[in-house]
Image (cartoon, rainbow, N blue to C red; front, side, top):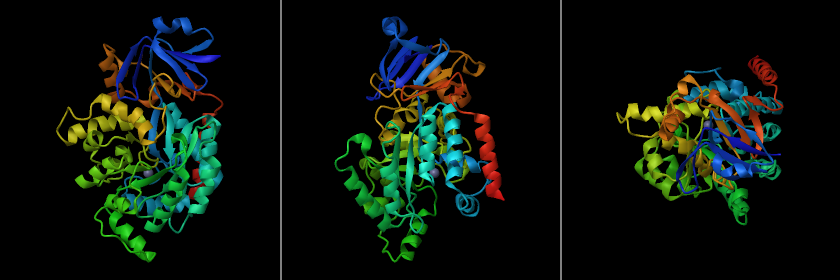
Length: 448
Ligand SMILES: [Zn+2]
């Protein structure tokens, strides 16, 4: 039997940025694609042979897209909070990561995938160690995601990253992709950036869109980045170019283009924003993590209006501290209004766009983030019949609930690649309590 979804209302952006509201919607799915979406009265003749999921209380939206995270860091949630980024990383996270084994990352990532699905996220771009473990966790549950082939100067080499690309890119029925993860300009030298990019260019030469590789990096997350980049390159005897910002540095190396997904993008001047837009760089904004780590806030209103390929991410669960993208949505919709004394800035439909079709563009993953016919069937349903989602007077009213009152806990059903992964809050083939216990055990062992 194929699947069909019913609901009270459906909201989505199509690929031409048109916002659609469909009342009493019916979505028809065949294999892993949406074949049609319209009102139930118009499509009900085609419903024969479909199993119907949902009811008249559901909001049907595209599965949410988390553009930057470190899924397996569920292992470290809440262990070292209220600290600056460099102290948090160098004194707390990195020493624990030194003790990690492949199985630990598998368990941590699996719990991260579970947490994501429970909150309606169907795709995540994760950067972490032991990418084969992350890929295995995603595949086991049926999640869509990108795992990292890490290159960090002095720690991991391009040859090893290429092995990961060959092993996992476009696998698991095309639900798993790999990014070449050059952690940041302050941990990866100019030479390593250049060599990795040369490999990527060769790789992408004859690829179709879905087979193309992206470089995934952290860009201008902290103020110290420029100084540390210079120190790193000097240590390896490399001449540092006459540039003023990390964005200019990446441009100088030649990697600032549409093959790059850059996370954070906080410390940008006007010229940097122009560069990012004109070079079609893909961006993940992670404002909740930036706020928590006291890294200043990214210029999000400008980024939304001036940059084309922008999505949002939670960042890792140790720096947010949840994988619930609704938290990020709400924070993003509220923060700049207060900070800039401007209540009309960043509207509900703009954050909805960032969490859906924006994510598709940021990750160069065609077919996700929308419910348009022929798109991939990644769908989240939200139970609207709840006190904090009342009333539902008109379309805009429901869209406002998405931005300002909805939570991950309101998600009821999740479909990924045409498969029903979560029904009425229950993820198939997953013992959540057992997974929680396993992660508790691992974290206890790592701390000993
Ligand atoms: Zn990150």
